[in-house]
Length: 370
Picture 1 (tube, rainbow, N blue to C red):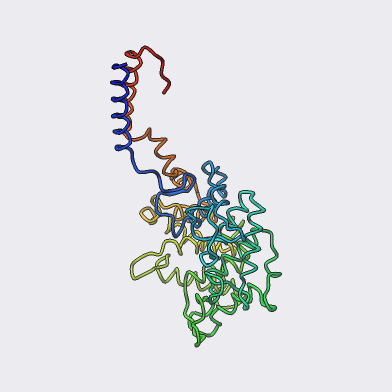
Picture 2: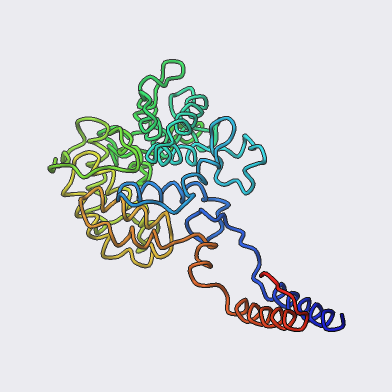
């Protein structure tokens, strides 16, 4: 009896050591790409990653699609991230951008019912002018409208049929385009300034609007041949926007900037996709070549950035394997811990624990399962 008590005490001591030495429980979902805090971009980066992996015909991590589907709210919309999907959504936290990209990712991976529910939610929160704002009820902006159009297309919805008071998504986009004859004619503004109607050219807004005006989402297959963009502000809204993008990229050294001498890699990558959507393959490749040569630091360990790089490569028929391989390697934290064999402190504690158990077995003369 004394020997058994001694073994039990030693076992308790080593158990306490193991608990004290163990790392804090993982706070990131097991099926979420990337280790950064997902509060503001969980759905966005997961959807982008799934779209890039689908384009490259690469299977996603186990449970990754199910995790995204599980983020959907009861009404069909998505918030940026739900830490506890069992808690009902706050309608004020749902947004069109998270919903729009999630719909595209779910549709790409065969989750048609969830994608259709998301598209229906987008139709319900459409603004009277035919467009969308980031959160329902706000002022229409080109970015949100562009993402929503891509989502409707992905879900199999006729975009032109989604109207409010006779106004549709393409009407909203045209209202945000700077007319020919004005400075930056052909470009799109992010949104009209309240009370003034004034507008300023915005590269990100133009990228999203051009892509959407071509009826495309985030995944665009490389065109079979090049269609040079028009040199003047003429043709369709998409043509005029693409011509402005090409002029700005040429003047800026092949990329867009978020500040002087500071490349905006994300917008540049999305410009590649937008230009390819319009058939402007040579212009898209010129921009992609700059991006591929300068984006190493930007895309490192960032799921959304790697996905943007991979989708830009896909849209120009360039090699996608490197960014896709790096994206696939961004295992969720729990899977990373398992693949690395765990913490050395755990190994030490576990070794001591086994030793004590074995001692207890020998002294107590009984079998023990661990």
